[in-house]
Structure formats: structure tokens, C-alpha cells
Image (cartoon, each protein chain N blue to C red):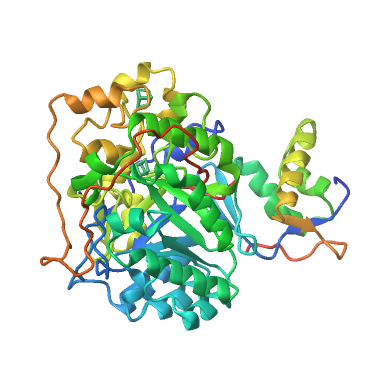
Length: 411
Length: 96
Ligand code: SF4
Ligand code: SF4
């Protein structure tokens, strides 16, 4: 993708109308920016969205990272979601955290907990504008370690304990909803309550290594319903990153922003400074440019050809005829792309059932365009031996609700 | 509210956008969207006018719409995006 020299002629943007309508045409700066600081990781989760493991030799230096923060401050990107890899294993992580906060860029960072010892927890408790999100993909060690690897449950719980003991307010427990843990939604909620934390549920996308395990991990059609009902019942107290808007086609729309924000209000800066349309779209097809070689982040955000295409009216193929199109909008672009479905058709998890038939048809799953997975298996690598699943599941599962691209905002 | 003096909260920053502006409150971390350029002018002008009425007039908002604008301003006040000004009289425009 190329970054144009000058800003393309602005597309005719309608005045007034709904906020979502405006968002479709893009914003001058993102409101949900994810920045992955490193591809290095101490774990090797089976479904890692960024295929992380090894550090990339071209990782941005401390100075380059500071320059990114300076630019975000100028652009008034008021906060950034930091992830990885495992961001806290970068030796300058704590420095960059303070640097960002001191430059009016609030930070929410995701971690598996490996470096959240009592000292760091006390430091975090003493800062403003920092949110901590601990990843946990099972309410029990058995379910969690199945995908995240042996010892990862204990590591996360230890971090949550340290944060609570240090008086850190309102940590987030971030759960990717899978076929195996969708039955544990009430348990997750109880766990969050126990640690004074907020539960955040997000959707599993077939991105990165997730593409290899999606068929086995993504919630089954009847589980989608369970998730939806749980979200409707428990929505107010749970964050979702607005990631479940494809479930809106069950009827009532879930609270939050029902829109794919990729390249419009959402984007990703990767550890080497490459900009992609969305954290779940690390692929050449969604590459917008490089902050290193294309003149900085603002230029890429405003001038990338890809982003300007995404901000133009889209065709939605078969979905346009669907009565739920207004709230579902054809679902997630990344989920379609990485399962080999057409971007202008239904989501692979379309709750009206069109996804399943599309998945059965002929399709080619696109090859990955980057992989930072470790080359040799790590000691704590998940084994994914079959985990027994209660076939009788009927009742209560899921909860979730409010953390999409716009989590926490009242449009 | 029309006769009261208001101002943008000191912890709020406004970011211009094609549809209006985005307001971010560094204290409560709320993000709010000001969906009309006129509302942005009013909000920006609050601090430099004696009262809300003159801020609305200065932004060329037709009087027939003032009630609606006061409603929008009350919404902004609920999340501390704007707050009543303690000292009466115009002060320096606030453009954090
Ligand atoms: S809907 Fe999918 S592609 Fe769009 S922003 Fe969300 S995760 Fe990314
Ligand atoms: S057909 Fe398309 S718009 Fe309708 S529910 Fe399925 S994915 Fe959503």
C-alpha cells in the first residue's frame, strides 16, 4: 500500500446524521489505537493474534517510541492500548509508560502478568491514566492453560493478587471467548469481583496463530446464543470492546458501537512501526504504511490509500438484503478475510447461519504474511490435548458488554 | 442555565473533527462527541462570555434552538465536560 504525498481529496461527508455514519468516513486521528511494543513473548498462546514469540530485530528503539508518543500527543490521541507480544518484557517498558502519561497519552496495557510483581503493582497503583488488563482465557487453570500454556493461569492470578494487594483500582480481566470457556462466564465474573476487577470479554478472531486453531476454538452456533443472552443480562457491568456486534442479528443490538472501525477509528502500530487497519489484521492486505519510512504516523493515518478506501462507502454483498444489516453490518472484516470468505459477504459466525454455509463452500485461507512464533517449542507451550467439553451445556454462560473500539464512551 | 457563566473543564481537551469535535476528560476518562460545529463554537466560547446566552448568540445559534443547545450543554455538564464558572465576567478563552 502506498501513502500518498498529499491528502486525497476529502470524500463528500454528509453533515449531521448519526455518529456511526460519521465514523464510517473516518476521523482525523484514531480513537482506538493499539500499539504493540514487541513481538517477543514469554508465552506461546495457541491463538495469539500477532503470532508472537521472537523479538523482531527491527523493533522500534526507545527514541523512536518516544517520537511516536510525541506525535500522538500532537494529534490528541488521548490514550493508547499497548500490547504485544508481552510488552512488559521490553526493558524500557516502564519508562515508555511514564513518558506517555507525562505527554497526555493515557495507557491501557495488556499483559499476561509476568512482570507484575508487588513493586510494579505498587508503582501502577500510584499512577493516573494507566489501566492494566490481565489476559486470562479460562476461569480455571485447566481451561486457561489449554490455550495459554502451563503455568499461565497461576501467573495471571498472581498478578491480579499483587495489583489488589497494592490497592490498584479496577484492573481488567480480559477474556477471549472460546468454545471451551463460554460455559464459564459466571465464574469469570465472580473472579473479577473477587479481585475488584472488571471483566472484559472479546471475540476470538482467526488472526495470527488464531487462524490455525479457530475451527476448534471458536464458539459453536448454540454457544453464540448463550453468549448473546448472557451479554444482554449482564451487559452493564462487563466490557466487550464492542467486539460482538455480529450478535446483534439475534435481535436486540448490544450496547456500544456497531461498526467495524478498521482504518476509520481503529488501527494498529506494530513493533517495527508498520501500521495496519486493525490489531486483528496484521497482513499485507491491510498494511497502510510505515511510520519509519512513510513520514510518521499522522501521514500514514491520513494519507494511506488503503485507509481512504476503507473510509469510502463499502459494498456489502449478500448482507445488504439481511434485515439485521443495520446493526450487524456484515460483521468483522478480519474474521472474513482470515477464513477465506469474501469481505463483502456474511461473517463466518453470522448468527443467521449464512456463515456456516459460506464456510462449507469453496474458499482459500490466505497464507500468513508474518510469523514471529518461536521456531522451537518452548517449555510452557500449550499442548491443546482435547479438553473435555460438557456436551449438555444449556444454561447460563456468558456475559459481556462494552468495550469495543469505543469502550467507555457515550456516543 | 442561559443566564449563568460556564466554562470548559480544565481537564478537558477538544480535538477538532470533520463533524465537530471530540472532547476528552483526562480526569474521568470520558470521551464525548460534539456532533455539530456550532456546538463546538458554543463550548469554546463559554469561557469568554458573560453567560450561556451570549455564547449562543456569538456562535450564531438561532434563538429557536437555544433550548436544544441548553439540553446538550446539560449533558456535557453531567460528565463534567463543562462546569459553572465561579468568578463572574469574561475570562481568557480556554482552548486546552
Ligand atoms: S470488526 Fe474485525 S476487522 Fe473490524 S475493527 Fe473489529 S476486529 Fe478489526
Ligand atoms: S447476513 Fe450479514 S448482516 Fe445479516 S446477520 Fe449475517 S453477517 Fe450479519
